[in-house]
Length: 340
Image (tube, rainbow, N blue to C red; front, top):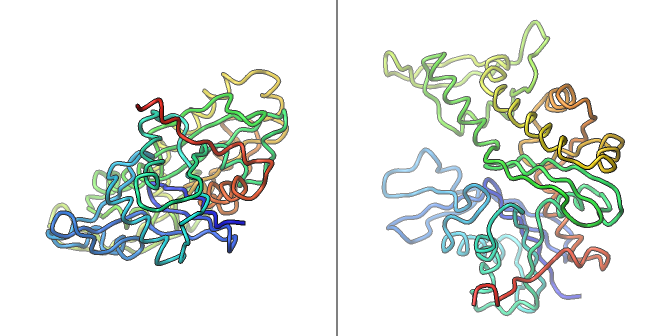
């Protein structure tokens, strides 16, 4: 069996499945550039520099809104991660890349060209719709005539999909994700607490004490941070409770719940029956927020299934496309004639 790699280029994290080791390698999808075009650092190392780098170092995210915004730097970083972190043997290998459904053919081709426009002679380069890979990674057999609903809450986007018989019945890509929650926390702290904090601090607060429902504990969780006081302009420590984070993000999460309801209203009755029976599957990096199940269940009156490791489900699903004949057909090649 040849080497095989399943690649999920997320906004926040790059996830790569290796068929040889049957493991997923995760690296921050961040790159640091000096002098306009030279890579200074990438991955976790570059992310550490985010919001801390001097003017001559530009720290950026090459994927924005689920699509490739910086092709050259994304390609450089991707090949470097494969070479350094995985020791990948790309020549003669099988490569499957996950792509969001609700993007243009030109945007999908950019993912394909990550490998097609290199000197690497891979045996095959294929694309796979992200919701299908997500469902496979969750352990669902999507070839059955059974309706499955998957909600993937990523960093920049949320993809809500209904799948049956190996195809997408409905799919919607929303411009919402974990980054919007981080921004909501930053805005709330500035508006209500007169405190300026960075997005990395906001992300840390969301992951550690963020909640989709109001805490009933008399003593809510608390984290001490340091921000800049708007009035004095000086740094000052501040104790943040889980109730504060809840107030900051509740409207954004209610928006996701409302969109799930809107998709459910469009689902054909027979498939809706399957979804009610099996529940809705929640995955993606932002699916681990405390209380998300309670919030969405109260809004839809349908049970929720949260993926244990929602960040890796797409990559694991790509692994199944690479390794199992039954799911091989979910990987497709770009039709070059479309772009001739």
